[in-house]
Image 1 (cartoon, rainbow, N blue to C red):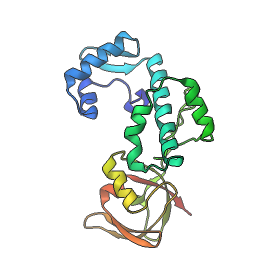
Image 2 (image 1 turned 180 degrees about the vertical axis):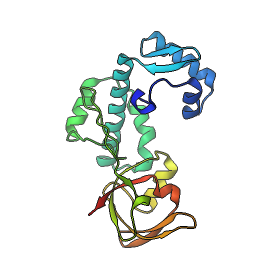
Image 3 (image 1 turned 90 degrees about the vertical axis):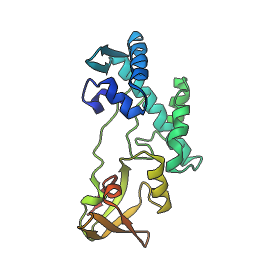
Image 4 (image 1 turned 90 degrees about the horizontal axis):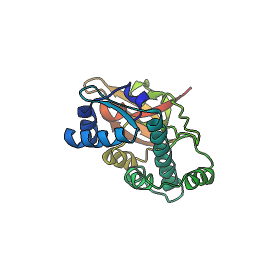
Length: 206
């Protein structure tokens, strides 16, 4: 996670929760990263990325998201499959390979989940993911531009109903008793729970 996304220093307990591991294991790794000057760490005060750490993190994010584009666009993997594979491929060290992969893919700006890809200079553009589908009104349409949830279960659900980047969703009905919404997708109607509807981001069709 990047400093800008976390809002500054974070605690080891927060990282342990996010990584689903023991706080002691996180503390050990944090100390090792601090020795390599990749993070600043003060006991009981949390840690944050150094400039070199931020540069390294952005490079890893860049590789991960480019590999996701490659897996989806060129090898036809599904949304729900690419994250774990990209986590393995992101550890390839060759900068030349990463840059040539970027050129081969046509220098994409976003990964298959709608997240921005850092440039080779380490610049990442944070863009608004527009509105959640839950925010649209009845009879409004939106084009899917991103998602909030990266879990395999979530992407399996999206795949089942053929929801991907560029899919047009139209709100047919909204149910106040549970905040679920009925949407039409490619001529078929699907009921989305409030949780799912809040995690699918769309660009409103005017």
